[in-house]
Image (cartoon, rainbow, N blue to C red):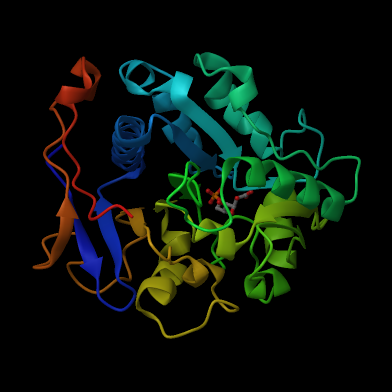
Length: 309
Ligand code: 6PG
């Protein structure tokens, strides 16, 4: 697979990369995550990332759990959080924690104390949100200080629903206007409920707020499939506001936002988006012909992803 350019998406300033298909999208996203993790550890001796739920991230997590990526990730310096959780038992098939543990966490050497699930089953979602916020405030500072702690995660991985929701920030949700809190409770909107459970049962969830996600050094969207194309166009090229398309609320103040799409998800974007557009905000070099022949980090393309914070 040749290299892929991240190109500036004019209206929002986000960087967009379009990959041919879901498999190359997962490979490219895993490459970016490993690169960001190793860069963060080199710069600050730690790496913090918040995981996304849903189905799109699963192949990425599986790649990170296997050679060569598993051996390239700095697990001993990594802190794992979640971007959102459905308020079900951790063993429930709908649990984001369960999906990430089965696809990734249970297969890598990350110390158990560095994995921070967002538990909210059997308690009021608001209570769980408050507990998770207190946890985050032990790792991240209120303001970006000259001091020891960063003000946000190095990387927040995000998916997006057909209706433009991200994490558990749903259209019309008051959580989108939250400026102080880092974690809130959210009730699924009917469309998401239908998509998640198939029964229309609207689950309570706990989610990072856009305000906290925007403290991240990198917000990385990974979106696949034709069903997302209209929302992708609306978020990256439209004029609507975040209450209509919550993913529009994700614009890290001092960080970067990258959108990694497969061609189906990008199919309604302006012609040439993510392909050979003239404005390459940043780019990654060519992936090795056989990714599984990657033996060291030096074999991965050097992704210059634009200025870090
Ligand atoms: C969740 C996710 C949610 C997800 C989108 C896309 O808990 O479901 O946090 O925001 O990223 O719904 O889901 P898919 O990747 O399954 O399309």
